[in-house]
Length: 250
Ligand code: ADP
Ligand code: MG
Image (spheres, protein in one colour):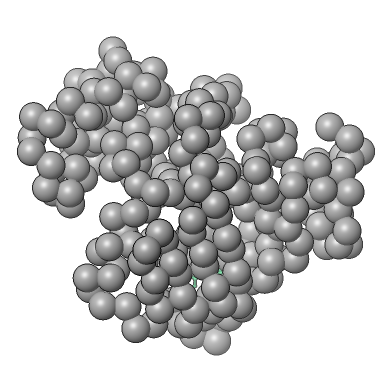
């Protein structure tokens, strides 16, 4: 169980998160929707301590940490329980696919090399890249690169994987293969928080959907509630903008 309470974050005078609460139960897939600039990326980055929130607290399992006063040890502890899949993959271009997955295990988690390699191969097999261990990022497609990003996150065996618009940098024909892998991961019961604009994917895999705008959670519910019977006008407007022919009955 992950609980984020009362998270606030400002960049200078720009208040980006204005008191956001998020709860994710073990095995849940929580999808976060919202227009550009609503604070989705900032929220994920604060959860992972890539960004330091101004106030609020996070609980993951037994570990409860106040964002503002977190010690180095606490930050490390939360980081170990989370992994992030980025919009732009963030792979090392001078390392092979296998090395990219292995890297974090060896340096951050101190896993022995041989074991790290075994885990990495297994995760690359899982995302369908058995034949790409030795390729460099520039030699594979964007969809394959993002699947490496997912394998890298899985290898860390975190309590939750945070996905930040994992398919939005991809050519349309490559989106499907990444979504397929994410569905597979979700079915295995891995806890996921996913920021995405892929609505039918969200509808299919989400345990719960959170709609954010302007740094607050506007509405939250099951995919059916949010997509078919949204209560808030702002949610309705957003859905109409994203899916112009939206009829609330997928
Ligand atoms: P979203 O992911 O929903 O599009 P973001 O979290 O990326 O939203 O951004 C929310 C707001 O925070 C935007 O106004 C953006 O300009 C601002 N912002 C994000 N990161 C930074 C940063 N590192 N420095 C200053 N402003 C930032
Ligand atoms: Mg974003």
